[in-house]
Amino acid sequence: MLAGCSLITSMPDVSEFPSLSLAEWKEWFVRTASLVLSRCPDDGVTIFYQTDIKKDGTWVDKGYLVQKAAEQLGHSLLWHKVVCRTPPGSTTFGRPAYSHMLCFSRGLRADLSKSTADVLPQAGEVTWTRGMGVQACLVACRYVLENTPTRTIVDPFCGHGSVLAVANWLGLEAVGVELSRKRAKKARALQMPIGDSEPSEGAEPEGSDGDE
Image (spheres, rainbow, N blue to C red):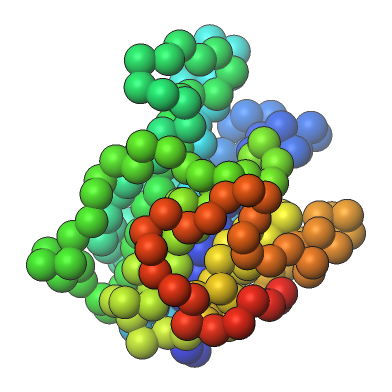
């Protein structure tokens, strides 16, 4: 268990595993999601940000795969948000026009009086095509800050570090893990504001900017 921590991550797509078949990748995905969930303490949450794929004429629902892992471990789904990647009504091909953001916990339950929008009209600024947008990061990190006692964010697949930068901007500690040296270097340097994107909800940062 990672005491005092919540986890926010986006797990790798099948395209990053050229040696695996789709079925093998699905098994890896569920097994790895289970491992991520197993490290979350009872008073924390695990938030996954995942975009489905269309492969060989079929739809691969990553939200379902994450929920499959959570059910096996006894973690409850607190909320499931849809994050628009393109304007509603758009037609897309390789990747859907939206992403899933799902929040799980073993011990916490959602306070309905603190409910927020189920559909985010935009993900926000991204640093790369598979990155988690700034607005989505803000929703996830603010939920941790306002609804859990945990004050450290762990991202085991941190990529360019958007989650880490937003967490630091909000005054949370952040730890990221990334196999790619190139991505890890960018994650260490990334700070808010990312690109030209400023947070849209008007809150002032509770701590100074910082990297992981």
